[in-house]
Length: 366
Image (cartoon, rainbow, N blue to C red; front, side, top):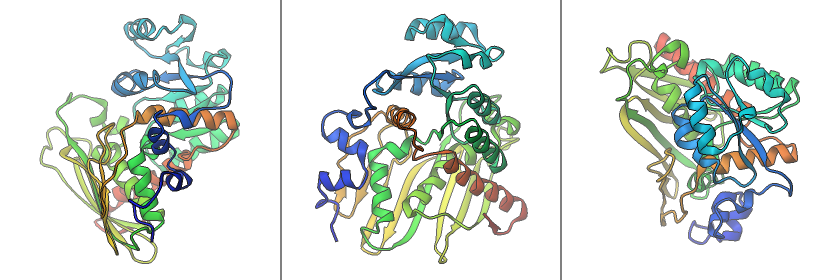
C-alpha cells in the first residue's frame, strides 16, 4: 500500500487532484486554463450574500471566465456592482428583462444564485436563452424539480453544473481518493456534521419553507450527505432520520437540527447531521488501517485534513474560482462537469427521503 506521505505529486496529479497540484506548482488555477481564446462571460442572477461575498470576488481570480453581467431587482445594487466591477449597462438586467439575455453574446454562462424556490424557473429560462448554467445548491425544492431542470437543459443543448465548490478543493479531493481507492483499507465508519447557529434575520427567505424548501438540512445538510457519498463513491439506498427543535419560535416553518443514518449497499451505515443551531463542520472516517477526515470540512476556507500520517499539506484555494474555471473549461471542450445536474439530483433524492422519514418515523428507501 502506498501511504499518503509516500504519494508523490506526480501520483497525486494522476489521481486527479488537479487543484492541489496546481497550487503546489505555484499557481492556484494554472491547470484550469482553457484553450487559447477569449474568456467566457458569466452573469450572476441574484446579488445576495453569496454573490456579494464570494462569487463576485472569486471572479477576480478566474483564468477562463470573468464577470460579464448581473441580474438584480434592485437598481441601487446594479449601480454599485457596475461601478465596482466595471459592468457595462448593456449587460445589466432585472427580472422583467431577463429573457433578453439571449441576445447578448458577452454572456456565455448564467449562474443562478437565487432562493431555492426560484432555481428551477431560472435554470430553465437560462437554458432556453441559449446559455450554459451553473445552479447553486441545493439544486431545487425536490428531486422532481431536479429532473425537470436536467431535461430542459439537455433539450436546449446546453450544459448544467451545480455549485459544489468542494469537488475542486484539494483536501476534499484527497478524501475522495483515500475513501474510494481504499488507501487505508475498507471504510468501517463515517460520521459527518455541518451546521451553524443562526443569528440572522428572523424573516429571511431561508426560514420560509415555500422559498427554501427546508432549513438546516437543505442549506447545511447537503454537505454532510455529499461528504459521505464522495468518500465512499457509492449511493445510499435507505435512510432513517429524527429531528429536534430547541428554538421553535424562530424555526416555525423549517427544520432546525436533523440526525440520520444512511444505509448503503452491502449493509454499511453512516451517521450524519445538519443544523441551524449547532456549529459543526467535520467529516470523520475510520478505515481498517487508520482514521482520516476533515475538520473544518465544508467552509469557504480554512479546511484542514488529517490521515494516519498526519495533517494534509495542501494549501487553501479560492474554491469558487476553481469551480467556475472548471465549468468554463467544460463549456469550451463541450464535456460534462464533474458536478452536473445529476449530482444535485442524487443529493435531493436523499433529502426527500430524510423528510419522508421524519414524517413516517420509519426507515425510508431512497
